[in-house]
Image (cartoon, rainbow, N blue to C red):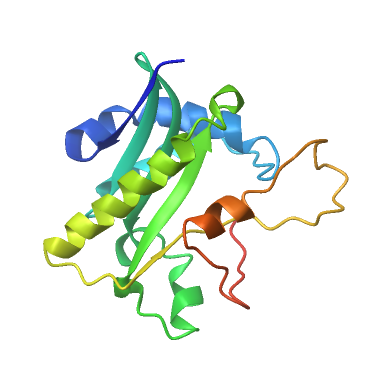
Length: 179
């Protein structure tokens, strides 16, 4: 498979929101998300995301087809649901660069695309810092499910080791709920 990964901001970001919405619905319906979303919610969510200053989408494309994507934006301008979690633990939301969701079709996993997603997003955060942002932290959220959940598919491999190898660590006690 010949997949290329690229960052998109501004008009190029908004041009791909429909394709990203469909991809998110498809991937998030599976474990561990078990998300039962709809196209209207996704459109609203993604348009709000795209309007955030400093937002970026990193897309993985097989030819012209989007097969994966990852989002990122300054936390203070994007995800108001998460900001209180950070504030309660002494983090200023303005100092946090938030790597949002990553979605990738199953047949494209295990090829280094997840690393490329993080590389692009982290580079974008550094560019924003060079342009005057004051990020001191880069973060993301992960879905927490019980290892004994009967809905867990056979052969599921959690991504905890992947994240730790990239230098990310869970923050003890920093757990919230997101509808």
